[in-house]
Image (cartoon, rainbow, N blue to C red; front, side, top):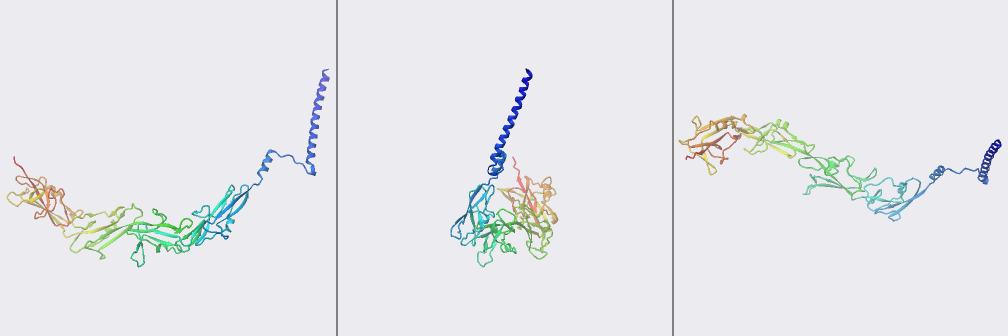
Length: 452
């Protein structure tokens, strides 16, 4: 019984497999029948990947309109605007460059220099393109005036010398008007204000006292000279260029009554400063000078030529706050100076020195004399002055003069005849005598001792 049941199960499985195979064959022939319609070979339906690829290869056509605006001019038909349509496919961009070659507007007294995407553009564009997403783009004609383009040369603190016969010969700037000198460069046009021989700077060179001209710059503050002098007419009708100056510091040596070896009364030396902080040094130039004056002895150089108020200069350097400096030769007719300290002296009454007359109660030094004299030769002079500081210290201390009933309080400057010249209200602290003097004096100052 069990064996018969197993046999029936096996037969059922075999019949099921046969049925599935028969059904597949029928389906296959049914598909082939559809594909053979009109005697064409059948193709299987595409997968999702094949369908996506087919969609990507589909071309999409887009159109853009380029509007050409004459921007003050006109086209051949008298209109001021014309347009061109262009179609592209897929990811291509629009390019109207070739179309623009046949669209050339005109304008009286102006030269057409190209197209730009703004009516007041500074430069023209060589490729007239647009993104493939644009539906419209406008190009504007750019013009250069034929007779209203200028180059301004600003003297920037200096001036131009006008060579005409007019009374006003000094002007602060030069203006050069264009004469149809328009030229083409990479992306536009410009007026060139410099000829092939580069003579512009020779014809338009400003001057400024104490400075050296170093060229023209594009801005007032710049120190970099420009090589090209041009005006881009699409940007402006004029261009300003500013003079660059380098300070020239000059040391002038004035013989001040004498002469130099070449017979001149003055000699000058100049140095050009590379920057405002530069220091001018004329020490080596000073060393090379030979100066002489009959009957006088040369002391040195000073910034002041006034007698008795000069100060001998030993360092000939000057910096930013000094420009042109004149040094004067200082002369003296004395080869030595004698200073006399007078013990007779006097007293100060109401702010004025009153000299005592010579008498029995004279102020005297320890040696019993009423005067002490000291002499120095010219070589002892320092910075144009003789210094008697050491001598004054000696006779103002333990060696000071004495006078009965009076206290010694110091010295005042005076002539040997006791005519006080200055510092009459208080005793002096410094004992320097100008080398311009051969003799000089100091007078003792006494203060009466009050008795009780």
